Structures are given as C-alpha cells and as structure tokens.
Image: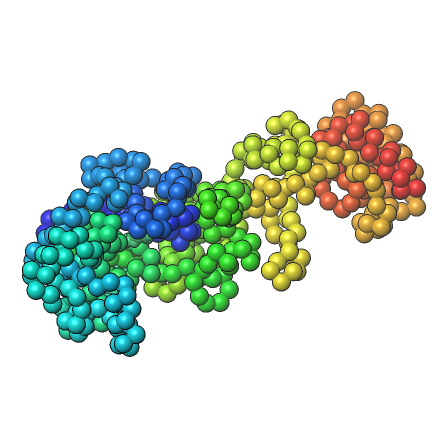
Length: 519
Ligand code: GLU
C-alpha cells in the first residue's frame, strides 16, 4: 500500500456548545496533522435534526479561532472534498445505502415503534440481530411483492446493517492496541431512515471518512463501542484496505475522584467546561467560558494537551510549536485523565507572566472601568509591573481561605484599588493598622510629609535617599505607618514605588487625612 497523506478530521454534531473534552480531541487531531504535514478537516455531523441547536456551529468555529487550532478544510474553510456539512450530502449517502442493500449487506425494516416496543416487552434484552430479525417485519422476512407494495404506498422504513454473527472483530487502536469483540453481541444498527431521508451517524461517518480520504480517526473514548461496527461497515463497502487507523482518547475525569467530567462539576467548583461563554438559545441560560474567565488561549491549549499525554519528562510549559514537535499519539494514556482545573489556573499564571506589562493593559483597563476607574495606559502598565508577582486570596471548595499567585488580570483589582482611589476611611480596627499606627505615628508622619514636601524630584531614588537617611539618623522605621496612610492596610508594593506612582500631592494629601482620622 502506498503511503497516504495524513488526513484527520474533527467532526462535531452541532448540538450545543463544544465541551472541553471535544476541544482536547480537536487539539490532538491538530497536533497529529501538523507533525505529519497532514490536513485537518472540519466536518459538521448534523444528520440528527432533532438535536440541532442554532448557533452551535458558529460557536465551535469561533472557539478554534480563539484557541489557534487551524483547519485546512471543511465547513467555512472550503476544500475539494465538500460539502462538509452532512445535511448537504443526502444524495451521496443514498447511493451508498443502495450499494449495501443491493449487495444484501443491509435490509429494509418496516417495524413500527409500537411493534418494536411490543417485542421489547415480550423478549428480555431484545435486540434486533441475527437471532431476532427473522421474526420481524423486514425485507428479509416479507415477500418481495409485499415489500414493493409498501414502498409504492410510501410506507416508512429504516435500513439496517445485516451483521453476521459469530465473527471476531478486531479494532486496531493506536492507543489501546487490539480491541477484540465478537460480532454476535452487536445489533443490526439502523443506517438510514426513510422518514427524513437521512443516514444515521454510523453510515454518514464511515462514508465521509472514506470519501474524504481520512487516514486516522482520533476521537473520544465514548466512540470506542461503535468502532467494531465501523470496521464491519468498511469491510461491507469493500474499503478495508483504506480503513483509517483508530485512536480512542482517554476520558476526562472529574477533578475529584472517579467518573466522567460533567458541567455540574464545573458549576460546583467554579471552572468552565466550555471554551467560550455560551448563551443557550432556548433557555437563556449562560454558561461560563475559558475566554471570558480571563484564560489565555495558549494556557488552555497547553493545559489540555497534557490531559492524557505527556512528553515523557517533567516539561510542562510548551508552546503550540513544541507540542506539535513532541506530541506522540501512541503514547497517550489508556486510563482516564483527571481534570485538574487548578493546574489550568497555574498554566494561566505561567503564560500571563510571560507577557509584557503593556500586554495586560487592555484587559486590565476593562476591569478598572468596571470599577469606575479611568487611568492612562502608562499608569496601568506600572501597576501591573508592581503587582503581578503578588498572591491573592481565594476561597477553596471547602470554604477555606487560601492564597495563590496572580493568575488572571482580574486578580489584580482587589490588590490595587488604592493606586487609583484614596482609602475611603481609615479603619483603626484593621489588624495592620492596630499594629503599626503607634503613639508616635502621627508626629512621625508629619515629619515624613515635611521631607517629602521639600523634594523637587519625587522619583523612587530621590525619595529613597531622603527618607532612608532620615530614618537612619533618627532610628525611626516609618514605612508601615506610611503604608497605613497610602493604602489603609498592609497591602501594596514597595513604599517608594507607590509614593512615586501617586505623586507628591496625592501622597501628602493621604498622609494628612490619615493623621486626621486616626488621631
Ligand atoms: N459526530 C461525532 C461527535 O459528535 C463524531 C465522532 C467521531 O469522531 O467519529 O463527536
């Protein structure tokens, strides 16, 4: 067999916002395509019209644009294998359904939902298969004339795949190795429904992967049970030679304990399970997204890449280019990957610190405006520079107060309002104030204000020279009381930096009002 160009696809059904697990699947497809010089296709699997949700397709496209996962062809990207939306490929599927019918590998079944229900009540664990199809109303059991009559009358039917029992079906999975099941446990899956003239997922998926010359099917573990059926379909069509290689990715597990990650876990613990905020068109419910929460796309990509794979050493921070170079599909784990959202926050911290202060400004400016503050870009960048290495308090899942590094631009606000607004009132009961506003504080601060007033140059250096030598000469330690004046509590950067940022007038004004209020 000649080497085929690597072609992979991401094939979501537009049934709502893209789950974070789907993003990981797309990412792995992207990494695999890029490292092999191959193509990544974006196909929309919308044959189940009952589950169609308006806006979902656009949402998915926007998500990948934000994340920097680029498709080579597909819906909205064009390409030579289109159309890429399955609802626009009806006629193509019909041809292949006919092929299976003509070859006797599929048959038409006329059983009504009521008849199927009756059978289910009559026979325990009923499934439509080699054992039961003989007692049902289908083109295998009914006389040919009867079938023709029903078709002419426009009776609805489904086409079922005729699975031969007693065969070992092997799925050769790049992650899981040889997965082997016996065909007797499979049911005669519905491939096509006359009612809407549409194929089911299974048929459309196989036909499209074949026609689009897909070489590798990389998808979530939840599709593994369908894989034996897919192998049999490839055989039935005579396409076994060009059947794609399969790779079923490990499940994403809850942050705590076992079980599949769900939206509820995110709601409970306060992390998003969708890349972008999603506004449900039916219920109006809004679900949070990584983008709106202030995550950087490169942090999300890096975090997701390591859920189910690692480079074999302890390297964690990797750019997209490095991921493309290092990713190894065959080294993905078989067992589920715990969704450690705290690690995701850690990645955001890492990537945020790689940015220049000025790159924080647009987002920081938004946060400030939401709090009624207007400042210049220079001021904002300066505050970022002074505060980005700080820690913030947060309340963990058990209600405990904890600390972590600044990991989002929005983390800065509670740390830095005093840069922009003077303390409204000085709280004598504040722990820091109580400890640092001593008897001599008012007099010391008067003296300090006098020195500052006399400075022509209000730079950090100039202030440091003047105050340090005064402190040395007198044995005073003015810094904590000074902090009380400018901040109101025990927060903030170096005092000279803060005072230089505020400027002479504002600094002295705050010192005076602190003296007034605290004495
Ligand atoms: N349409 C399926 C989904 O929503 C595609 C599964 C596959 O990749 O075969 O995930």
